Amino acid sequence: MRRVYFFGLFALLSLLLSSELLSRASFAQTTGVNKVAGTKATPTPAPIPAPTIREEDVIEKVETELVNLNVRVVDRNNRPINNLTEPEFKIFEDNVPQKIEFFSKSEVPTNYSLVIDNSGSLRSQIDEVIEASKILVSANKAEDETSVIRFVSSDKIEILQDFTSNKTDLNDALDNLYIEGGQTAIIDAVYLAADKVTDYEKSKGDKVDRKRRALVLVSDGEDVSSYYSQQQLFDLLRETDVQIYVVGFVKDLSADKGFISKSKQGKAKSFLEKLATETGGKAYFPNSVTELSGIARDIASELRTQYSIGYLPSNDREDGTFRNIKVQVTDGPGGQKRIALARAGRTAAGAAPSSAAGPKPN
Image 1 (spheres, one colour):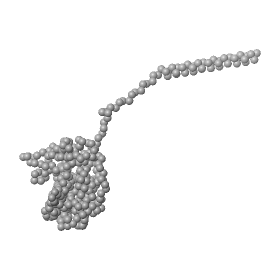
Image 2 (cartoon, rainbow, N blue to C red; image 1 turned 90 degrees about the vertical axis):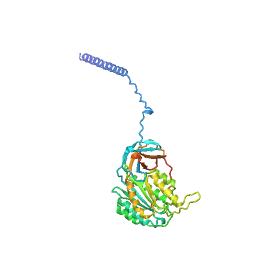
Image 3 (cartoon, helix red, strand yellow; image 1 turned 45 degrees about the vertical axis):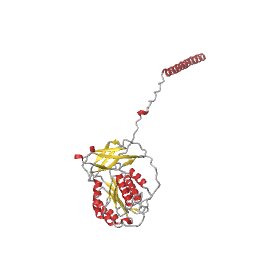
């Protein structure tokens, strides 16, 4: 009886277990089907096409460097005119009018180099040249900086005093000038001095460059043995903004002309005048050393009675080409003629022919 009961109980348990397993299998199959069915029911999103950028929609950022001009304005008698306003000026680059972005008639700090010929041709004038140079230094303002360069030949170009505002140091350097024999190299001296004053400004890292740069050259103007040519010198000057003031002792040079050539005096004077004219400076040709003190005072005044004008060139191509610059000023009351004097042009940024290394100042 017990055996029958045991087998009956075992059969009942087996039946219940089988039923449970079948129920779970059915549930799992149904759930899987539902999941598959759900996956199929979800639509796949269509890809969004990337926007098409047209060439005309691209904004190109072009940075153009401000061109600074130092402008002197004089009347027919070469007297300075210092009361003009911005609307009275017009700037042209390659005959195209330019918009003035910056205008000032206030005094601007000046960095200038005294570049003094120490060859035998200035033996009789050197003492007066030193005293006149000290007059120029004494007129310096607090922010002005000056250097002193003596030169004879290409291998005798010496910086006696680098740029400084210390007038005592400058006067000491001037007292150390001395006459020395050699073949005069004026072009090399001016080339290296212009390069030096420009590099000095760059080394200071000023983002806004409002300092005026100038050279005061004292010489007889006769070049004998320069490494650089006149063309190379004027190419450099067109790339920089350096005004040149010239004191030329040309009267002792020979005035005898050749059959088809200028005299030594004529060549020297023409070269010195071109230096001044091309850079917006001024040339002086004293007949006597007694005129030097007045010339020094005039240069000091000229350096500080100028207009600073800046414009963004409409031609922003960086192709290394030369651009002619012309400044016009409206006539004054009663038809008073006003003459604007500024550098003749500039060389645009860009590739420029490289030149071989030349002489370096000591």
